[in-house]
Image 1: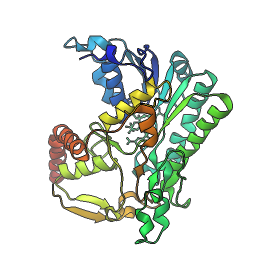
Image 2 (image 1 turned 90 degrees about the horizontal axis):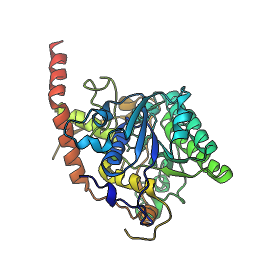
Image 3 (image 1 turned 180 degrees about the vertical axis):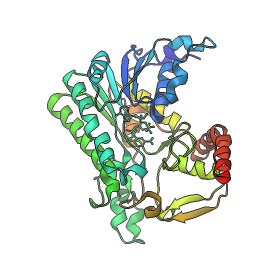
Length: 362
Ligand code: NAD
């Protein structure tokens, strides 16, 4: 059902249709955002990516008439932003640019640090520059990794202050960014993201760039990454939920890196996308409220290779997002795991069995 007419911006005005240049639209977050924009807003999306498998279903010719509502509102542009002069004209044609493109799988940070730094910093530079020069608003996807380790992680293990929120809750405008030493190459990702954040902030301060920086805390759900050997390289290591799905599908124990001590906050992708939609129509600060499974221990060195390190704990302060967007996530961890793992099972169970049978026969 179309909800286009019902959507209003945070001032209560009807949303004017706009053109959005979405870079990295073919990825996990991009595919969910494209779906939402097609189904519930009048906006047009110029979808930029090197792959389009995850959004192909939005571009196929209408079978049931439903797709007519977004016919022509999504266009795929296959290009690599590293080296393509078409990028500037796409940004110029748009009212808003959303940049999602990045290498963002932890297994790459310490094993492919150069690609990670280039992808997250150097390749994002022209996007920021074209937005600034052409007076276009930018929504840039950074990461909660920019906070690094918590202040509390440096206290002795049983120190009572470790339990005090001010020693671990991460606040956008207050918390410091604490990374490990240079030889822990894991931090190359967070550091590149931090530098592009600082550049965007400086473009805002010096040249008036209008921007929003988003720092997701583990958004998870269907279409995240790949299952090794099925729709991705067999030696590839995806993000944690896809790793666990792969273990479950193969009936292997879950691999817990360094004893599984690190803590994360998980948000269901569909809840998170609601917040992104609010950022797109955001116009002024609004005051409105708005199984029991066996596991195995694996060392980080064995799992990720030399140079790995980790954030101890990631818990966001929710004050600013609550105040500005009136948003809080609705889906419980239990429900989001159930729907995501059901999707993983439906999508991959047969294919995993086939690859395992092939491996045994060989
Ligand atoms: P993803 O890997 O699924 O999507 C990224 C997309 O960008 C891919 O489709 C990829 O092909 C594309 N891309 C990369 N380099 C490109 C290039 N040079 N030219 C064109 N396209 C390119 O990742 P995602 O989970 O959708 O994450 C999107 C953004 O959000 C990333 O910047 C990531 O760092 C950030 N983020 C995500 C999470 C999360 O929980 N999913 C957490 C923290 C940060």
